Image (cartoon, rainbow, N blue to C red; front, side, top):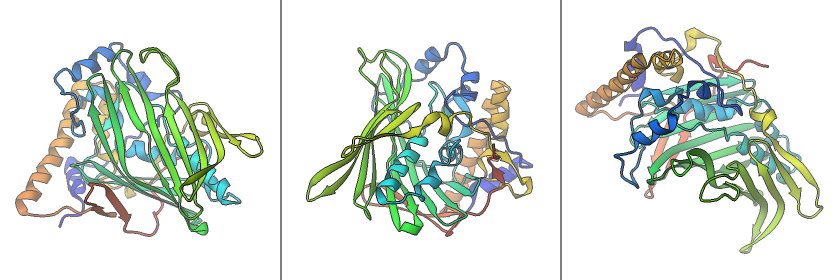
Length: 394
């Protein structure tokens, strides 16, 4: 049994250095700066020989199409990078309805503006990402490579909130578009209320034709068995002509109670996830602001290393540091070579492990898969310790 495959790989590469880049926020930031003028033609050229319906989970992108960060970092940024603490608000609700709507608002806050033509690095097996922001501590680990499965555990110092996620993206090519469905179980636990909220994730839709775009789509369900309350959110594009035009950042939904096969709508939700989303009480007609994107994901702060000596060699910002440095310098030859080295070391270790008959096990999570192919994970520790990487207070 091998517990930390990427540790040995990173150590062999030399002294650990970390490269941290700006999170995706309303303005797009870093990715927009990297975007070349002919990005649409270059993206279309990538998929000329890919069959419709093909699974792109292990499609290898050239470094010129990479954001200078790993997918683990993007998952983590949705939790620890926020201008307003929507997560802590969940545990302060005075009743079950207020807590559910707070979880809905927090769920919307994890939706970040995607950038057409750019994708993060595919995490290597055993890669980790560990960051603290205020009182919340977040730990992620790549617990499977084929298929790619990422696990997340987050806890706060007060013992009020715990997050446990197990996510597996499945991108498929449909000829004129690519749709990435994120499978897995995401739980938000409000510990002092003994409430667990099951939270879905929207799909990422990349349209290649007739008009290139990238947007979140699909239905997100948020449910709490303990209170009997549920919410459904539809991420969709407003009316357009032949897929051209319309607003791709609309969100609409409802909060309801289910009993005896019927639904009682309690609140209606409407707005745009990149602006404001309103909440209307059906009984009273009162309308309030549920979510404000500018306050939540505008002008986000870049994490920084607080304690270099405590950095793990499996940390995403360390594993991909040479690749990220080269991308930021727009040295594409160096970026491509550094990326090949990271992925080559991972393949070599995988081959050696298989030859020895060893089974790799995650370091921070236990993992299982049911007969339907669904993944579930459990953190091995009760809480997440403070991280050597922090998000500075504003």
